[in-house]
Length: 348
Ligand code: TRP
Image 1 (cartoon, rainbow, N blue to C red):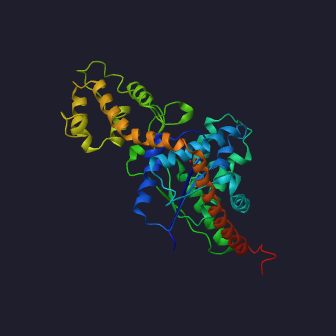
Image 2: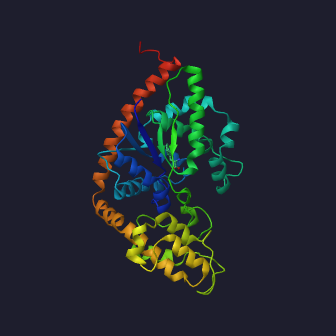
């Protein structure tokens, strides 16, 4: 069986460090390991339109921004096929047949959809396109026979739903589809990286993000305005590490070598945490440390991004080339799907 990786993002804004630790990092690791036959990364513009149908321009503009983020972190067009969802029209056809295999009630129970509906103001006027996007996501995956899906853990219900649709299809029409599996990050704090406000998951709509494209000054300002422990008022007060945004970030981003480099008085994160708990360690010091770590991580990404930005034609060429390939593959698999269903009238 071929090893096929597929994943994607909705182009609704620049990607942030929550995306990085939640999924992009894994994608890079998979790329570097090279243990795959095909690797697709899709810009899910059609899916983004399901809740941005009134704002096509925003979605369109962000296709380039997301591509810049991908390339800036080191995803490599020689190893990965990048494509635009809306340009592969076969995907809508897959979706149309899969719609018959899912009930309205099942879609309404999808935890991610439910969560998103809560945040939107559709009230009782939920657009069908939005409610059924998990079905189209199943199409995205199965149109390429992908089984390895590196995503953040918010996408687990989507993968589960895809597996159900695959099973229903195979039961009815024969075993032709493969069940996909999610590949999650290693560090649990990275599953849903908390926003800089410490309240909820990092998310553009909550304005609590550090973007991969942020300037040095923006990063600094965001780190220094982070919440720590509200009861840690004086340096000598004992402080809480759990639920402390700065420590949650240090858990995810600090490496053992960062201590010698930026904070040589401590040997490890555990030592730093112990001191904070005991009292006598000020917030400024841990914020400075985190700022140094994030600056070092984001500087090369930002610089590469600025360089890539100068030549957006080249980026669209990469995307076009990938999209042509994706069309071809999706088309071949669509013929197989319809043949399995017995709705090929003129091919034989
Ligand atoms: N739902 C994903 C997100 O919001 C984007 C996406 C669309 C996707 N189709 C996909 C991810 C297929 C993995 C596989 O980021």
